[in-house]
Amino acid sequence: MSNLSFERRLGSSFGSRCSWRIGIAAIVLFGPACSARHSSERTGSQDQSSVNGVSACSGIAAANTALSRAQIDCPSATWNVGSHGQDCSWLGTTDCTGAYDDCVAIGTAPSTCASQKTACLALVPGVCAEAGAQAIAAFVDSLNDRQRTRCLTNALTTWEATYNNTVAGSTLCTLTTESVCSADTYTMAVTGKFDADGKPDAFYYDPGLGNARLALSSRSSPWTKGFNTYDFMNSADRVITIDYNGDGFDDLLFYRPGVGFNYLQRANGDGTFTLVSGQSGMAGYDLASPNDRVHAFDYDGDGKQDLIMYRPGTGKITIARSNGDKTFSPFYATNSIGIGGFDLLSTADRIVPIDFNGDGKMDLFIYRRGQGAVWILQSFGIGGFVTVSANASGGLLGARWDFSNMRDEVLPFDFNGDHKTDLVLYRPKYGLILIAQSNGDGTYSRAFRSTTGLAGLNLAHSGDRIVAFDYNGDHFDDLVLYRPATASGGGVSKILVVAKGNGDGTFTQVYSGTGVSPGFDLSSMYDTIYAPPTHGQVQPQLFFVRPTQGVGRVVTVNANGQPKAGPCAAECGNQCLL
Figure (tube, rainbow, N blue to C red):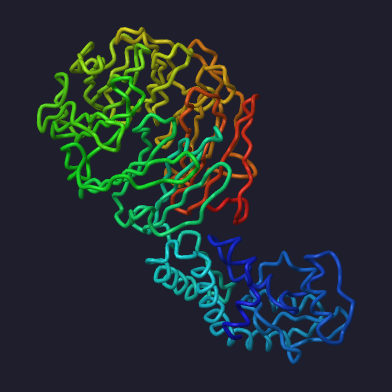
């Protein structure tokens, strides 16, 4: 079988539709006549259409497309003609034992079947080797430059190991490339408003492989190497959205912590971007550590988002004011003492921008997981930041959350629509969750607490996660709680819950399932759900992404809280290729 004939068999239907899971058994379904075994027991019928030529074999193939047997070809010399029709099972099959069983089942003398089984076993290595090499070539070709950097080498290694194991057992040769490239890519995403249609968009990128793609709600661009001269060839590369000029469109900041590179891409409002700045460091902050963290926020309320950059464990922090013209000026900067009395000398320190009083100027919530330190700093715009609450070890006192565990998570949201940032505080694996209501003065009160999770998800697994959004436009933020499946701990069931906000800190389950079907099944431990910013509007869309396989789905939650996956341009099974 030549490369040319193989490519003609596969065509675009194989290469474009199923780039992520390939089996030789699947390959033969695209082959010519004589590609499947006749078995009345499996199909419930017998093929009596012909005993002469290809037509009989074609009928058998059509009746047996569900069989996972790896036959490559079936020359007429190998046909066994009998009262049960033609058995085209021998030459090309790699499941010789199964072929022997079928041979006996259709009435052929066992001694004849045994002889054919011996001949079949002698052919297995050649069949497997050729089909495996062709499958890998087709797989890599279908990637269209994405993931090719090391994928081919890994694919060949995976195939060789599988081939050796299957030949030894004389069982079906299969090539599974589902995880061949998983060590080489980790697709990440940011969501925002990149054009004027009012619907959320996404930007996907593979740090370290150089691949990037802009996915607008109205159209998608193909994967490219790099984006507007930024190469994405470092695994540390990260992207955040930032509206630096206040035009209502989310711009993109690409940066490389540990190296210092950063490129600012301005959204033009039509789904395109223009590179406006490329430099090393930002506003005097060098971005020289891989531990550097960057957030966009608007501390002075002028509508132009500013930057906060800090390095946990060192005390280094800079707040940079956007000048609206692609440049940023340092507003506050130190290399060693932190801010507002919080020293930032622990690698566990984290900063979350909030607006606890709803004045449009973003404040700072700073905490140290595992030790209970919590600071709240109020922004007075150009007047700077003032510490309004400081507890070195007691956690968030009014809400009575101690931050004593390294697993503690903080999710800012607004459960009652008063424009003051409330907090979801939760501890995955331990079932603890608390809804903290902002009192508007830098203190928080407990609105809800549970030790058994929320809305049907018990938060008893370390992989449990929560995102906030507003699917029905009532201005009470709702929650999505989810648990991606994982093999650790003996296996964990995948769970997706949509919880409607009642406006008082409590939530009601409106959907519970194992994902979105059809669309996204949460079967990978790396599955991530992104909730786009609302920009003050109803936001029922969610972006489901499987980073290690480059698949994902845009999911819309209707007014009743029921999620439905949207269409996609390219599928593999029920998974939508990004």
